[in-house]
Length: 570
Picture (tube, rainbow, N blue to C red):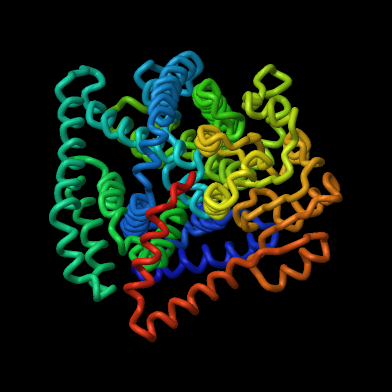
């Protein structure tokens, strides 16, 4: 049945929405809700949509917008701060997986020939930027250390694919010139983006900043201009959009652009995943068997090439394992690469079909894995310890702590805890000798230790971590993390555990909703902080200052306060 573009888009959106609503009952991931209806209405299902060229075009717009937003939300300083971990991990993962894949598929198949095995090895070495980033974004884990390492590895993977695509036509007769040319194009793209973003865009955006619509349209124009320039150079449009976002990520109106573009992006990204579902062929027994073999190899190779590198860098079970789990799927670019190999006569249609099944299977499987990665960590961590791969060992400060128990515990270290520690340092420095922080961020732990603050590395939602920290000796326990940051837990659940471990302690927890305060007191909290009340009080003072034309003085006062602060988390 053939339809016009509007009918095809309507069918895709309606099918995705209906299935998404159904998936809410068993709480299945939304990605599954988009892939399944795509298969159902596509050329391999009920054939309601058979000409998906228009859908492909629209879905690619969604992919470009998604990567533009990713670039906008990237913190280059933090990325560079994790640069060593990212570079080493990406190098070992990419070349390790390619090498293992070349050997594995060359010996076992599914197709004959070492050249085809190389294609399959490269395809298996790449992870899906779209799927991973969307899931980490939804879970608010892009800013975690494992999230930054994951995104950094993905960027280097994309760079590797671009270079491989440049030499792909010459694999039967390899030459150095195409590789050098592709690398030069990437440098040119970044150079132009930096020059325009650094010198030309700031004055233009400053001129139109009072009209939010022009800011948003200008940002989108910049996004698609860079995507088009990348395409002109023979590079990935998506990489151009990513670089465009990074170059304007420091502009003061970035958050406004993100807020406005997000709703547009969601529409196009939905069509992107529906389109991926349309490409999944009808399974056969042979395809399913090879799909399982391909998928098992991909997951195994990720664990072998990612976990050991990060673990050797003393980043602990959490960062090492979660980064490996995050990368356990295949990239959409892998299917593009195999298709180009087919047109060159280097890859068989059979291999592409197997890879398509593996892509769909891993897309769904890894969605569950990333969504439930905290559960995986809890299950696997004890086994790693039994295999003589213990989590981060106790440092000297921890040993001293065990000999002299602390009275005050800060559970979790984020922005509020960082500001609290700064106030303690300035107003009551003597309390630092009686205080210990429990957190699982290795970078934060190192910064705290350099300041002489005692730290116990671990997940505050785990009973064993709290017991190791000596929580039973606590007199005051403070948790300033909101529920959405507590992975696999909540303030209410944490409070129950703390009351069991330390019945006599005075416990302070965080609440976001007024309705939660009464419940937390009923569970045994001694005090519940409600930051929205403090913020409202401060805003009232700001409002009063505005009415008396004193905002400049208020801003100056704030600037002086910020200038004097030296927090662990700026």
